[in-house]
Every structure is written in C-alpha cells, then in structure tokens.
Amino acid sequence: MTRIFDDDLDTGFGTRAIHAGQRPEPLAGAIMTPVYLTSTYVQEGMGRHKGYEYARSKNPTREALERNVAALEGARHGFAFASGTACLDSLMKLFKAGDHIICGENVYGGTFRLFDKLLRHLGLCFTYVDTRDPQRIADACTPRTVAVLIETPTNPLMRITDLAAAAEVAHKAGALLIVDNTFATPFFQRPFDHGADIVYHSTTKYLNGHSDMIGGMAVLRDDALAERLGFIQNAAGAVPGPFDCWLALRGTKTLHLRMPRHDENGRRVATWLTERLGEERVIYPGLPSHPQHELAKRQMTGFGGMITVDLGTRDCAQRVLERVRIFSLAESLGGVESLISHPASMTHASVPPERRAELGITDGLIRLSCGVEDVGDLLADLEGAVEGM
Ligand SMILES: Cc1ncc(COP(=O)(O)O)c(C=O)c1O
Image (cartoon, rainbow, N blue to C red):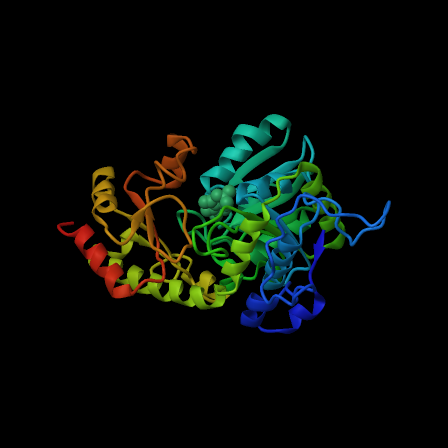
C-alpha cells in the first residue's frame, strides 16, 4: 500500500504533476525516478530488508507513480494496475458474492463486459441506471447495495452525473461512490471534492497521454479501505511492469500543459462541427447546447478533447472515418495525437445491439479524441472528411 508524501499536497497542481511522489534517487541523485527492473530485492538477513521483498508487492518506480497520481487527485493512497480494466477487476474484489453494485448505464463497453460476462457469474449483482438522475440511483438501491459506479462524462455519450448528488445517495444507502475519472482527469475534475470514495483511471489515456502503454490506477482517501485494496493488489497480482509505470509517470509531468490544449482544441472542433453540421449532431459538454452544460460547468473546470458526433448513418460514419488524414482511426483516446473511432463496432461492440440502440449508441455515431496538434490542421482534416454532408 503506497501512501502519499503529505507535503506533496502543499503545492499547486503543476508542481505536483512534476514532483509529487518523487525524491532524488539515493545512490547517484538521479533527478528522474529510475526504472527498477527487478523482480526481487536482496535481504541483509532473515527479516532484515529495506522495506522491499518482492516486486509484485512493491516496486519503487510503481510507488512513485502511485504517489504522484494520488497527490494529483487529492487522495492519500494510490494503487497501480496492469490496465484500467485490471484496476476495476481488483476494485470489485473488495466485494463478495451477493453484493449489489449500481453502475451507470453508459459506461465504457469493457466495463460492462467485465461485469456482465465475468463478475456476474461469480455472484456480484449489477443494476444499470441512468445516473444523470440521482433519483434513479436512489430507486435502484437495495439493502445489499455496496457501491455506485459512475463515469462522468460518459463514454461515448458525454453524459454528466452530478457527483455530489450521487455521493449523497450512495452514502445514504451505506454504499461507496466509485468514479471513473479517465475522461476528465484530475486537472478538470476532482471527484473527492464532491464526496467520491474511490477514483480510478485508465492511465492508458490522458494521464500517460502518449499512447505508449496500458495501465490503470485507483486512488483512495480512507486508510482502512486502502489497506484492503493493497492486500488485493498483492494477492491478485494484476500489477503493471516498472517501465509502464515510468512511462505513465513521465506523462503525468505534462498533464497540466496538455489538458488546456486538449480542451482548447476540443472546444474549437466542437464549435466548428456545430456550425458545419448543426448543434443537434454534436455532443460535447462544453457547448451551451449540451443539455447538462450548466452542471458540467459547475463540477468541471474544463471539458477536454472528447467529442461525439451523430452522422446519422453507418455509411456517413464510415466515409468520415476513412477520409480523415490527421485523425487516425483507432480505439483509445487521450493521447497527444488525434484519434477517431466508431463506438458501435469498436469500444462498445461488447454491448448487445438492442442495448446500444436503447442508449443511443447508434451506427452513425463517431467519437473524436482531439489531440494537441494545430487546430487549423484538425479543422481542415475534418472539412475534407465531411465534404458533401
Ligand atoms: C472511460 C474508460 N474507463 C476504463 C477503460 C479501460 O481501460 P484499459 O483499456 O486501460 O483497460 C477505458 C478504455 O477505453 C475507458 O475509456
């Protein structure tokens, strides 16, 4: 279990991004945390060691990342995992067969797949609700409800959940509020300030920011809960390798520089798309036309680079996806490079078609992850792609 350095919380976000969790390495004073490529640590005698016994339990590169992200979120403890999905799987091991979890109905397809195809068969019970309405969360609570899990904004429909209202409902039911903060990042949204108990990320996305590793991270404030998750991290062993931790740590150092540019590009592209295609086709919480724009403004300090566009038909979507030159057709998001994807056949293919239709994840929907390129080039690329529409 990795606890933050308390004095890391005294500094501003950018200083934390660069320094939190890291201290000069004792042997040579290396300014950058080394990649500790080791599976085990030499012990001086039986039971006498430097606090490190085996690298599944602890690795100094991993600890630096865990402290760094925990400090960015304003948490006390951090736990790194081999992927965002592995992180969620380990979080679910906090619970037992018969426990009930309320989950947002529009979450990443892999989250639904993990719950519906694996964990349900081990006895965990899930109810999927539209968490935009806190009353629906309250109505779904049962005496066995142990957690409410939300994404906000959601993937890909960019729906917003009122974090404070969700926390109040969850806590009234004696449940934990777990928040996937992958889309917003702690730069734009701080779920602990609104009452969340656990925040997790796919670090694969904005935290790493360079599309060169897969990872996950959970951060918590509560010591007892952290103790239990630390046990699970070691006992289940879904830990990341030290080089991936180093890459993620290198990414978080520039999070405060990248996010404003993702946001700026996101706003410009969303506004342009609105003017070009009509506001009813563009879903972006930063647009006044987004039905929850006021809530988004209240609980987020920026809206990032994720935009969903409804092009009406699969053919139109395919045309745009295959015509772009700077946006690359690929799964994932949050990197410096712009990506474009088709949720129905890619990220949300594991959601049954009838469920996708109910949610509004239609075949005409495309999702843009605006990178940090020159926005004029992104707009020209999209102009070429939507020509004639
Ligand atoms: C919002 C969100 N949460 C979690 C995940 C899962 O993360 P990973 O791909 O690192 O397992 C993803 C992946 O796309 C995601 O978009």
